[in-house]
Structure formats: structure tokens, C-alpha cells
Length: 149
Image (cartoon, rainbow, N blue to C red; front, side, top):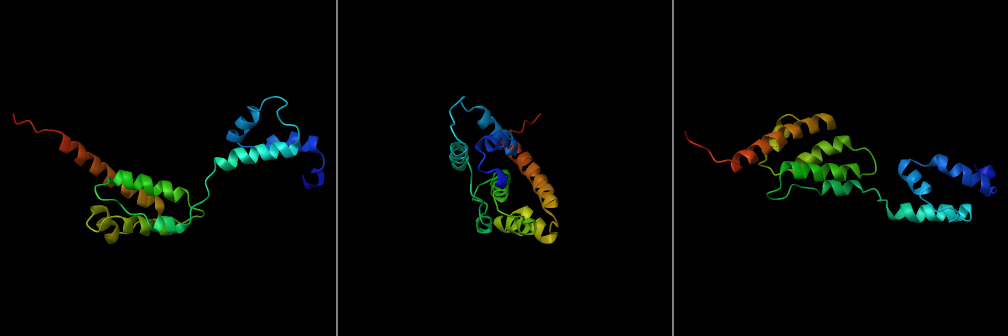
């Protein structure tokens, strides 16, 4: 494409082939004759998608996460995995230890992970899900009154 960069008509025709579904939707929604040059097209594209993009987060943001007082395991794990997915890079091994270290010392999942460490992110997520189900059952049980026959 660098060879043909001076040929605006060709560049404009080839541009859509590099777009994913979201960007293609944006491209197709442009009004007819609203773009007068390839440069204007790339500027419009850049200004639209730069405003809607997030910069990757550094690993240090994951290291600072911890479970808040009275926060459910579900809420903490949702927040944790959302942050994990915004990291720039793959940190599976770090995810296991930082998730555990973010739990309160007395939390049963932390004790479980200390006794038998999960060896992969998938195993960690399985263990988290088991403890989330137990927590949900306990929370549902507190809301019910016992009826004595």
C-alpha cells in the first residue's frame, strides 16, 4: 500500500477492507459525499475511534486491587477480571497470586488457594466460581425465614 499511497482513489477503495465490524458500521453510516479526500477519511476515522478507545492499563493496576469490606466475591471477581482484561500483555501467572492476595486473609477462598494453589487461570476461575456459588447460596439463605411446621 505504501507504493500506492499517492493514489487517493485506490486508498479510499481499499480502506474498508481493513475494518472490523464496528468500524465497518461507522464507515457505512457516513453520509454520501461527506468525505472529500483520503486524508479527511483517515482523520474522521481517527477522531471517532480515538475518543472511543482505552489505553491499556499497566500491571501495577492489577497489583493494587483488593476486595472491599462487605464486597461479595462476585463483585470483586467481576472487577478483577475487567481490570485484568484491560492489561497490556498476558499475565496468567501473576493473576493467580494477585487475585489471592487481594482477598481478605480470613476469606475461605484465600485459605483454599494458599493450601492448594491454582496452576492456571482456568483453574483459578473454576475455583472462584465454586466459592461464588456457595456465597450466593448463603446470601439467599439469609433472606429466607425458616418456617417451623
